[in-house]
Image 1 (cartoon, rainbow, N blue to C red):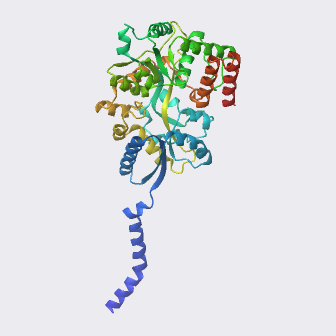
Image 2 (image 1 turned 90 degrees about the vertical axis):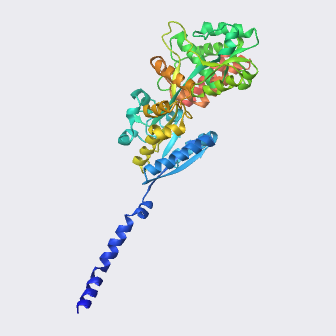
Image 3 (image 1 turned 180 degrees about the vertical axis):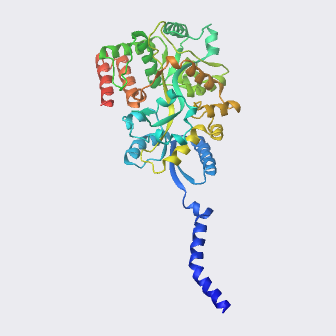
Length: 423
């Protein structure tokens, strides 16, 4: 009878034991594997960027075992080409590397990306200044956080300048005087891209005419006559050998052939010029922001090199924010990334590089120049970095210089380009 009662007891509690066992194993490690929160992360870049980023993702997942990150990466050309379509269709990644001007293109009202103010508990925003964060704020919403800052800055082959007892120019008059000396040797001052030519011309006009070219909403504040004045300045840069080859753009080949003594580059790209100068046995130095004495406008502009944003309808915003925070502020990831996206502005990441002596000195010097001059460098408007605007400026300026268009025709054509972009 005792054994019969025991059997009946086991039969009675067996269903409860099965339920308990199911719950126990569901809560075990195997169960968690099926409950991981998945987020997609997209970026552009070459193989070395992909390699260190994938290593960083593995480290992030080890720190956060409940999160699975699905990487998506491609070349810049492919990424840029498909980004808009994927974003507007809702098929974009949860965490995205974005370009600064995309805020203007895809989120003019602040609703194109997730407002990271809502998930700030998972973002160590104290590593950034309020001014830093303002670059990613659209209509009061924190759409993106900058990784590093960029501004166009001159860089020179100091060894070449010393041969003619030339010092670094600080004013436009000094720049043109340098060009006059170099012209006698068949040299030019700068090799320069269309983008940086635009910024160089912009700085000259705003300093000398005490007037900004663009309004806060991205529309032009200048008329066709004033655009013509800017085009005339570009013409003088060509005529007086300040810039080399308006059609070729930035060219290391010109440096190797001793046709130029300097360049204008993004501060996080100066190492390209510097390393080439060193290969040629010279020494490169960063230059000064060219200015007009007594100018009321600085004419120089600052922008984020690239930024991180989150999908506006992200299903796992907390986890996405944790990944963004890791990419921006984690000590170990900073050592993996180093200066690939520029010198990081996050205090924690910058400190990590400094302590481990992982900073390239020239890029760090460029960052300090930016920080030191922050009060006199303007915040770049996203439209000013738009490829269509840059090409419109350069193409029409060159058409005028080459005699293919009149100054009035070229000025009107550029104004039409800007008006179409700001509709």
